[in-house]
Length: 145
Length: 157
Image (tube, rainbow over the protein chains, first blue to last red):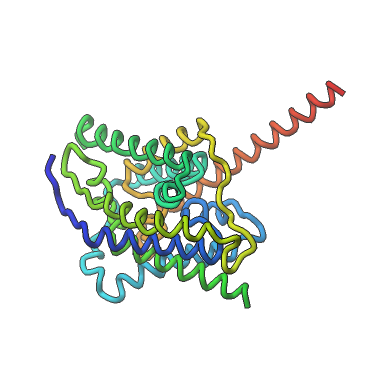
């Protein structure tokens, strides 16, 4: 094991901002800041409950742009996908299927659900974390990619 | 008034979330995959992202849930289900494979649309297709189960 590019402070601060966003959404709107859940209601339209979802997802993109505009994102221009197009398609489809069947992703289960001490979210988080670790181990160390 | 306030809250929460993901550098899939690579080039940062998010929420959520209602809505729309079923595990496993393969979970994926990059659009389209197909399939399945249930009831009657 070699530890690389460890950035605990920005990671913690960024995480706290994500937590603040989730707390705001719960306090003011009574909704869970689960990205796959919010996006899912647009992708498979939940009529009458769409406008705020568009605002939130639009906000995500604006948040990313804001970070680049104010110059904090020095070097973000070289951020790119780590796999080729066929793999991106496979990965994207699996993320869509998995988060829909499992009713949540890293944010909804991993942050909001665990904070609510939901047993379902704990099992979901352990499932996707463990599988992701195993997947990377297989791809990088057994298949040697 | 409440309506536009509601939309403003959703927008602000979204901006905060996307900005937070960017500050945490979770929008860099190389960093995410390195977090998942404990036996290779390990980058433990992502654990601190979850730690920061969890810390804020573990304190805030119980305080917020003491209220009878949210500030701008009539009730909390929080999942009531607590029993663990196989769906939760199967979904988690499928999601985990996809996440490990490309290093993108839904939040960073959608936030990265801000890069206006072709590979991001590709994975987002695939994610949207996977989500739509699954939601459609689940809805068909529920419909089928409902029909079968009705038929059985009719037989009994």
